[in-house]
Image 1: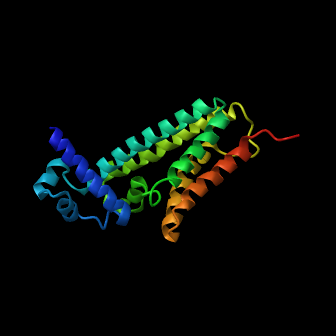
Image 2 (image 1 turned 135 degrees about the horizontal axis):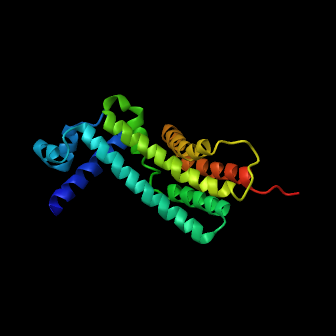
Length: 205
């Protein structure tokens, strides 16, 4: 059982690296099998097809991202119990984490699947939607806490503001890859931080 779990993780790790490098469409089961040093039947023991593989990659990505955000923003709340300060600290910690990644952020499985959603069945598309909506709920709750304490200086829909966090990350990753400048993603997160600070911080009289 443990060995089967290890093989499954190996398949997922290899598939994830390939997908983030060149997309789902260009990643074949054959190359995954070769790199994992298993048989095709070994692959199909764990995943019935590429849809099942994509679904597992997305579910794992959701779990990893949730744990990462939990850790970052729990630390932020320990450093500042004010909801605005906690958000600003959390975004700064996130930017620093991305900045310190060797070679830059590797990319996002959810984004990769969204770009090529024609390849997948409903289960995969629903898992992808669940990931995005989960991030929206997470950041919306944080912005609700801030808005309960600080009036906004502009009329902004908080769901859209929550989506802006994901949009900033994904957009930063695209620009970083296109220009081969890994630092751009963390810079974009810091610009988002500046916007949030300006949107909520009390005006100086």
